[in-house]
Length: 80
Image (cartoon, rainbow, N blue to C red; front, side, top):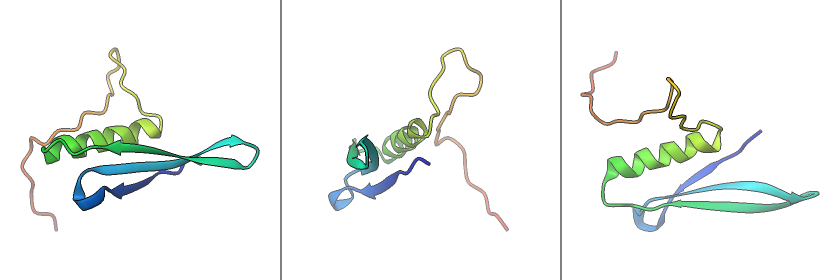
């Protein structure tokens, strides 16, 4: 099973993804992947979601028809 932990950076400046990798028999090392704030909330959140998808095996395929496409271009609506 793949584990992934996401924490907000200091002072809300981006995110850090963390997961363990087994280096040798029962010796684990934590991998840290920073997602730095670029000043654009949509860009930050898009990059975060793309890295989460990559971690769980979803990758961009330039010939594929089912690539992940994260956009912020639709209005919301009331649910319920």
